[in-house]
Image (cartoon, rainbow, N blue to C red; front, top):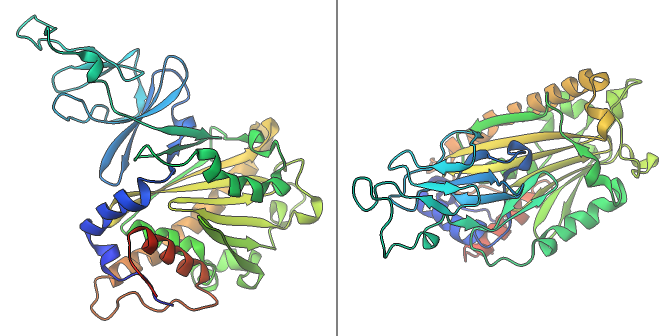
Length: 370
């Protein structure tokens, strides 16, 4: 099966084309609502050479804006934190409300003159990006004209309902400790996604994981906007007598089932009977990618001190697994610069999900991989 050529991994022009044709028309995950839980909380985001900003408004609504002042284009907020009521540009002190309205323009008409007769502040508020909170995940639509989010997320919800039930998502809890993993990868974002899509590398790259979740016990599942694996060998508590609380609706005979889909283009998910992890792939540049992962347990009891040791073990396990991938993803990026390689070979059995992803990307950039 034909693969995407090297220049889709090594070129800024192709990277920006993907921003416009792959990411912008869709709902894409850019962050986590729990990173800005209270009014006045701000969380700057870097996404495909675009500065974005999550802001929790005084009305408790989470909004996403382009993180640039409307005056001279200076980045508005550079660090995560909490502001009182206003967002102030560090260049000329133009100031915005938490809801993005332009509130103050000091000295705009000369020293001590803060207003101009013909200047309509209401036309120069921050540019808001349409956004949706799905559980703790924040999805945005950069183009503003994507189909309804409910239509986009429905296939995943339908796939998971037999496992976590109707109320499963409402039971997710993020603990204060042992719930975040942050890794930066010197590679193109697609390589991080492709690595997640296949289990072929488990025996070589993840020997410890392969002992408890062997390659032979994985199968590939494909959908219109997702692909991934179903594992049949998950073990609660790694075989010990203690384990984290499970989803009440999860069938006991399926405790060994785990689902690892990639929701295209950049959201990697792992659903097990006792926890969920979400890895958001944030493309920074064509050869730099940030992996932001959050771990969620089930129910209030799961985030108590009684289960802190189990959460720590779980966090350490996934941290090790995800860190093991950094070297191979980096190695693939380095190889993309070689004239001795241009896409490689996608095998019909082990690389099915990767081939599906390549076709999905190629279709959106108007390229044929036939």
